[in-house]
Image 1 (tube, rainbow, N blue to C red):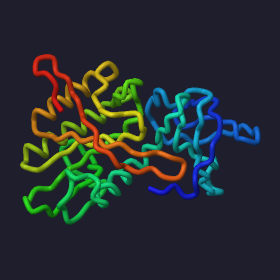
Image 2: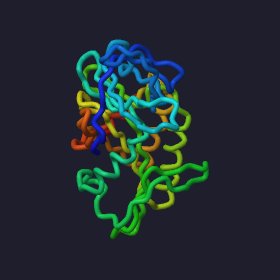
Image 3: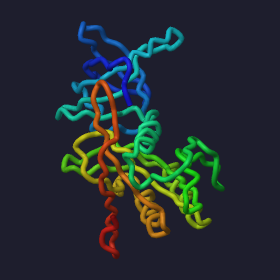
Image 4: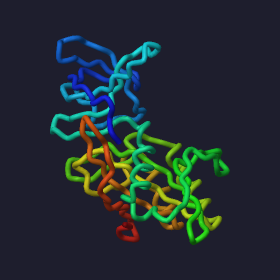
Length: 245
């Protein structure tokens, strides 16, 4: 995904009220910018890091700039705009990058489905095996500093609900995938954040046992473009069953 226009750097001062942050521009101005991320943004919002901003250029918006990428204090570029995650994955599928999701004739986004009134991020249809493929996408921005990315970064009952919906699709004979979109370059594997949301970790293990597939791909992040280009492993250690990958 090309970022047009290219992002502008600013010094992050603080993030607050979930959707707002104060930054200092290179010319010294202090501005409030929009933060398109509802999570905790652990490790992505330290004061003093670089916030890369998109100029929305819309006079009807209250805040001119949107915070799209963080360059953290260790110099790692992290895509923090969760609203573009589905587009990143769709582009990668259509470009043939995601080998596991090839062979479908059509891709639809935000399709209503399930008993819990959900919307699937991507619905792939028209495969030779006759099954539809339901793809639920999660954005990963948290890393432990040892190459392990975690999801979620805050308790999310909604994320567990999505796993239940995927299990129901498998039970109906369809294919279901939980897809971790990793928008940072220092992650080499992904696992559930059991210490943050134990229910999600438990539900993910149930989903894998029920036949839901887990995929993870990492993006190359820069101020000019964000592109998924590398498959990662998903590890889900279980107390009695070893490691599920």
